[in-house]
Length: 105
Picture 1 (cartoon, rainbow, N blue to C red):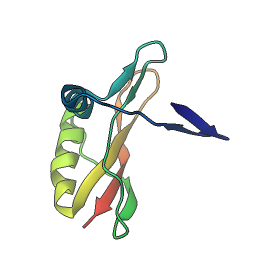
Picture 2: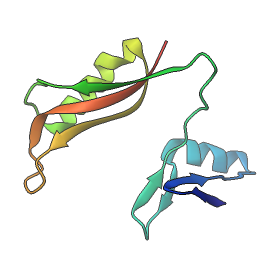
Picture 3: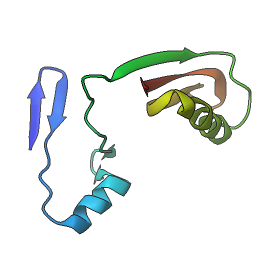
Picture 4: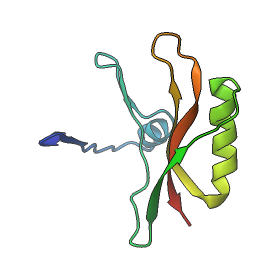
């Protein structure tokens, strides 16, 4: 069921089969027409502390190497909720900066 509150959109899904739950947990729900993939995550607890980090002066490696390294490096601080890097629009060249959203311990 899709819900909307202004610019914010919500998706509520009821899954009945254990196999479907495992598949959705691993691969998410894909909407090919809109080129959208929704990935599940655990709900935040009352003790959750979510931080958004601005990352600069990152090493000039390939995008895949930088993202992999960031995931590894930031894992000691908490759960990585989202991570991304800045790329040049026309060439997709990595620009040395990015962001991370963490649920810290």
